[in-house]
Image 1: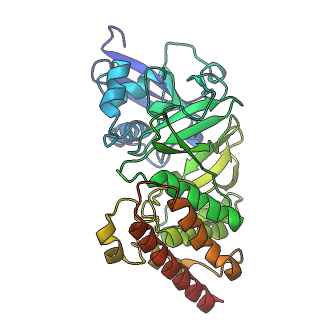
Image 2 (image 1 turned 30 degrees about the vertical axis):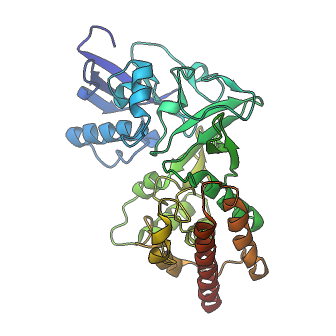
Image 3 (image 1 turned 45 degrees about the horizontal axis):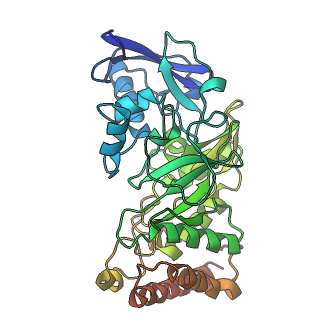
Length: 392
């Protein structure tokens, strides 16, 4: 970072200056002056607050949340590869760039443009030319790169395929390595019922370690904005977050928000997704006009189907699973949905077939484990059909 004690930075949205702030050159902590330039383009809820100390704290939280999490098992290796002291310095070194939204950071004294720096149009990693590329980050990944501004604890890596598409490779945290298979299962179920989603493919590296692969939902013109951001754009008092989110979307031109949320809630119950938080669903918007386009496709479904439970405890957990969005469990969240016109009961058993067929491809799963998961998935399907019968 040079010999200066403090370095000034711009937080930008494309080429629009959004905020100025200063960081300590040695500690990468926000110190000194900071001020908002364009409140309309803030990536977090600062527009309602003009308190300097709180603005500093919220900016610090946003920068830290933009980078790799401490739970990434390859974090120490990534830090060593890049010669930095921590993930914050890695974010700054990588200009805070990703292929999800259009925010980034650079030193105020340096003249840089979005056109020359963004990861949608510019090369950041070697081109993928076969299906055996390793999803772990190695010395081939340079800065700037979107690989240093992704969340989650699973090893993952953005690469560019031979078509020029930005593709996410995503591994697993557990010995049975079930998450990549679950991503494919969820995608195939949603494909069957024509639910808007991000498709995933199952791949494996040189050591036959499975990982999932998907394309980015964003592009050079349109970006993904999380539900956390959406919910924070307006005060909601005692209003339930579910209705608050829907109302904000309607106020911004997305009229089918309830239908899209209800689809997500239904799928999360059927597959037992216990990691649907407010960071992995949201909206797509045009980053030039700031017009909201639609609810983002459903993605990030790997933490499902007892992915982290041992065989003996699967039955103990039963048909319900943890909820993190609108209620404490996925079963309780079904209480807010309307009758799903998309659900065809004659296709209900296809859900079971997809779960069975895809899990059997995982050589690390025992027949007993697969049988237990299938049995509980059947029960979930029956519960879901009973609930929607009552709604109808």
